[in-house]
Length: 216
Image (cartoon, rainbow, N blue to C red; front, side, top):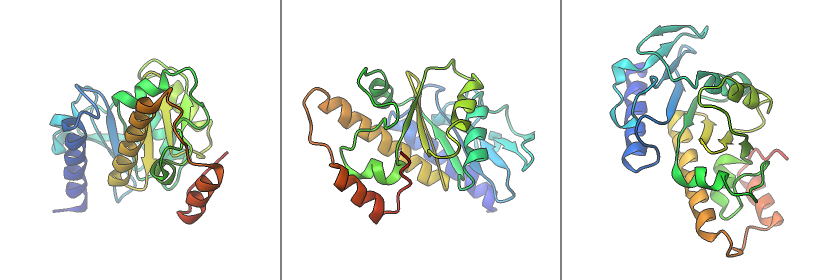
């Protein structure tokens, strides 16, 4: 099996796992990953994570031209923005997971640090998450908003829509976005109950020990 064939299979396997566990639904969500030649494999528009076909993934060359497979997700400007501003990004995953979306609707959420420091794991895998405003699905302005962050965030939350995470590879991106949803679930469960958050010193200890990107 070639490296690209293995990547195609991995994308579909991980997408189905996310779908089967209810982390996205219907034809929501999209995923992309860098190929060894600098191109991209992208989930097609209107496709379900539960039924992706490895042979039909959208294929882009290193120049950003669509050269094969089905028509890509309409959120390509969002994906491109991460790849263009974060040289270390090898994959981007966007989901419509329930608790993260619910948390984005809370009036008291911190826009510059969307995930409350309830456990060390969201800090370790995501750094600070930026809450972006609501955009129409597919609006190129989402990509412009990500570009405006100048590569300083690996994860953003689209208000009333869903999270987007970039990471070194597709497995790491899936792990990180799952951590985001798990933390959002904890936030919703504890909202209004005054949970004990990690202290500033504890957060700094995690950031230092695990060499976390932690932009102010």
